[in-house]
Image (cartoon, rainbow, N blue to C red; front, side):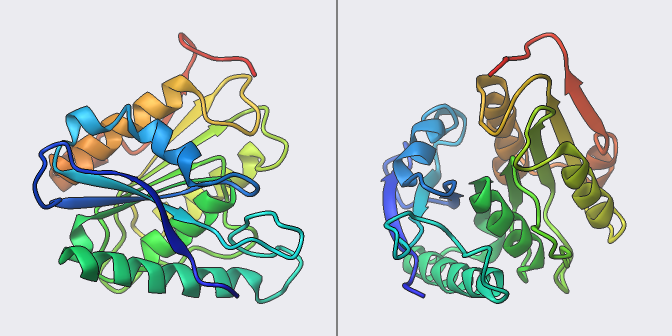
Length: 231
């Protein structure tokens, strides 16, 4: 498998060396620019963070994907490639693992979620849009899991709501702090309110780390009925 490479990035607005790194993983068939565009909404409240998109390798059909779902070892290969990428990205910026956050959509969410909760350190936060573990059981690393935000549409036929809830149950059963947001009528996509919620979550857990007690107060489902976007 071809290695993952750095894609478009949004430099820290503070103009100095970044204090945090937010790595973003696009969906199958998309590219890194789609994720960087969303980061424009998050940068103002995270001026010391660099937002870096990772670019998945293209398959024989020219489509960029993080793993081949038809390959029994595809997901493991994708996770190994992502781990190499993350280690190199952190080393290049001389940042500790605790200053890393992962954000992904669809297949990118799968890798962000599985890699993010398993990394030693642990990472500062994980946000997964419309992604599940594709049958793989999420396994928390030896140092515990970062706080996780799962955002999903209840009309998503590709990553069904039930599968995402199973993921939350599996993670909370291992002691992870998981917040979920269900978007009414949303299919397999990212919408404005989900992007805003992700920015708030990243700002809270990456830049302004809260106490465990505060996280416990928010360990439940949020169903947003007032600002739903039908797609």
